[in-house]
Image (tube, rainbow, N blue to C red; front, top):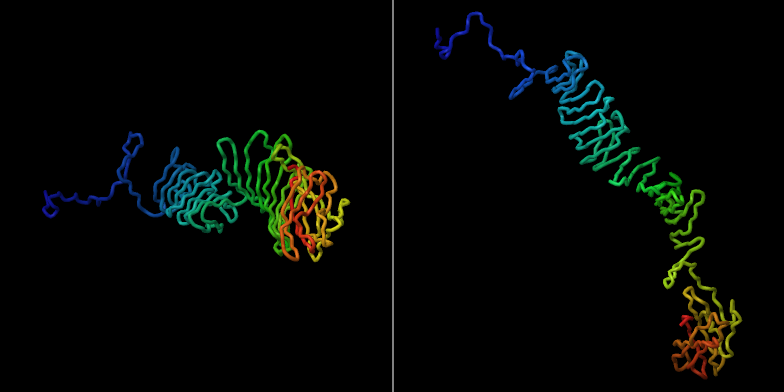
Length: 408
């Protein structure tokens, strides 16, 4: 019979159970493959998708997808979200419901974490705890759940190393060891027994004269074992000394400082060689000799002519010497001692001071009336130094500052 009130359908049999959603089943005899278009899992604690291998049982849970963490009927603990691997203290990969990603090692330590809420990827040295965050790559500065602060960008925390390795085995290392930041440049050459380094150290720490030293260390070769350093020191905290630097040479047992510099200028120690551009050979650079004052200190026997002497009155006395460049220098201020001066001022002591050819240079004459320009002459044969065209018959004062190349 058809009941019109049921839309033309037949009424249910008397005492028939109410209809309900049918569970998903696997047809007997199949290869245990379940194909569905949509899989919906509902429910609270204990519900989710669980994967076992080789069969459901204690220790066989290899993956789970749940909204709430818990323990399955076989005693396997599982976490909320997607977890793949051993969740009972072993290696596994997990994605929490809030999007955080955790990767654990065989000891179950979440060494690698990706936390979108912190915009950071974090790497720990063992179980995450305060003080063992060693690498952080973050879009913003922050603090992890253990209290480790990190800065925006890439942060590597001691004792970890930041290392760049080239295709040929070359290495750049950045590290902080015992409070000293350092950079190591390693070529891995066969002759390299020590790498080039640069590091900064604090001396007299916390004292009033604390200062910082930057050391740039050169590489060491297996053949010799010596090396050179450049030391750059800051000023003392209490300004008791200024900033400065030095070059160092060391051979394992001895350290030599051939050159240093600072507020006082450049200071050399020991042998300093210069290159002769004409020959290409190296030699100790010449230095200017002491001043020889005519008729005075270090005179080498020179005396003034009968009509000349030093002007005095605070003006420099007449002197001559060989410069570091090998030139004859004559400087000073002289004046006549009589009204009719003889031209000869003095005679150079020996051939080392006499130029190869005679020379003449203009000098300024200050005369009572009128002023005129006189000439200083040096004779090549005799070494006589003369003044020509000096004003005669009156007192004459002449300032001299001349340089002569001896070989010309």
